[in-house]
Image (cartoon, rainbow, N blue to C red; front, side, top):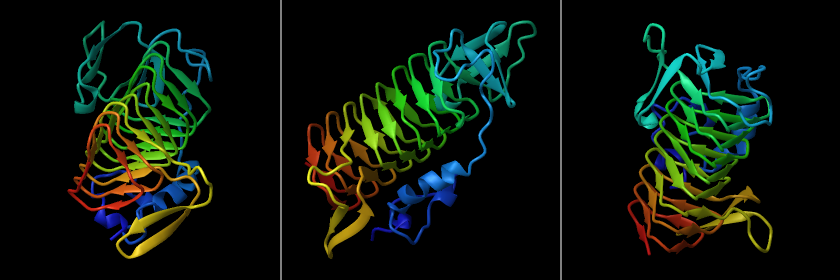
Length: 268
């Protein structure tokens, strides 16, 4: 009931090795640090991109190289649909798969991997280690605090804070959200202002309430896990250890109780 295969389709997720289909769905949070520590990260830093300082000019990442956007045309289409386009001005040739770091973005630490066609907007702060998937958009004011991994076509939205969390493909936290020690399934979507609390007031491990009784996760910090296509409404909150099955809905202005919520269930 609480195994990974019950919540996620990992068939096209490039980091599926993080998960064991037959283990509890939160087990990936236990292996995330090791997985990311063993990942190979490119060197993004140069005289154009300095560790911990806002970028003075927009930069382009293409085929392992990072260079100035001067002499290029950037078309800001829908990043998540592969519509971010970069062209050379002199011959109008498209740099297929180019990613863009906008002026004002801040990268901290040497372990940051930015996928093809991804966009990091000005004012976003990305701490190491972080893996940003292809065609993922990190919007203005986003704060990625490290040990964060997204699949392709994800959104880390305006003033959204993410810490030690995983986004599967097409997962979106578009506006004013907080995610700590959490997992968003494929096509999961957070309404504006969603907050995932991840630490109990009274301390101790987070346990999950199920029909068969309480299950100790062994984790002191545990936010929420949303199965594929699950959604939250605006200004919703989850208590530590909230697990929502595939297609589940947390209604706006609602606080979800800790525990397991069945697929397609509506939490009011």
